Length: 464
Image (cartoon, rainbow, N blue to C red; front, side):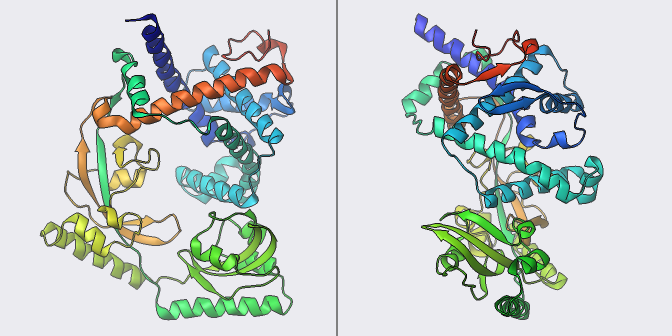
């Protein structure tokens, strides 16, 4: 083996080691951005400054506390990793400020609500989360916004640095061939999963009731009532209710097609008639516009689904499950004919793994509801009907089937090309990001407290 190939193998081994070491750290730092809200230190101090961005001791210590809470041993190496991760985030915020990178209120609010919903599920509900943090949901959301905004700005700054990396199949193959054989990870059993979804349809009368309600809201607004107040009181959109239905800085592609068609057809100050999207019925007011960037305020109301309609949807899927079991339909044909999920119905019902972009799932990495439904299911079998909350907040039922099982195996090009492609791309991105950071550190102001200057960081934060 040549010296260059030895170097490549060592480099790729370092990449795998780095990847394994940072998964837990990044997972906690990125998934719990507001943990400091629980027990903020009375006395705080700035332990580092990166450009114009301070690092507070309490923020560092709160992250360390999270690891202790997870039962992780807090070694010196872990302390270095945590602090350096925070320093890197501040460096990316510095770039975001220099490049005038922004995130709008709508994106922040949407992200806050998704994250809050996740934490509420983990905690066992809204009340349990409030009890844990000793704060109201409103207070928790307020304390989430700033760190989540910083996280989003940092991600956009990072993307601006690593954007444009392209890889050929030969480069991906070369990356894999230079991975040390004894360090290749074991890929656990993987599953291709398909679904058929039935969404209960509201009755014609329920739709008419909602349309009439929204028309009345429009009349009240035109008569002088404040739309912001009405939105706070009545909208069913959690992403904008706290802001009185307002979304600022909206660009094309951020909302569903039907909403954007109405939004861009309005004059400033004009209010639309009620119209329907997959989320329900809306009225929209155009508050401001600069080119294709608009500020809009809306009120969303969804027609109510009766318990009878829910049971009809469940009974319908029960009958489809029986017909598939009796071989009247294959699962794929039934998905195409009966599923209400536009994304999967023409793909045999196959679900996309949001973490990978492919169709394979590892059981331990599935969401809990999916894992529970598939617990005792064999390949080709069809699950019983189960309830599911859809991303658009609609209630639905679904049946699932395991269409394919890929047994546990050592990482290889034949079975895991997409995984290796992601690893190879991540490796190149990490190298490009590291090179940018090494160069940038030389040219900006960085001040690290003396007690941290002898820590064994990867990057030269002390500029020695």
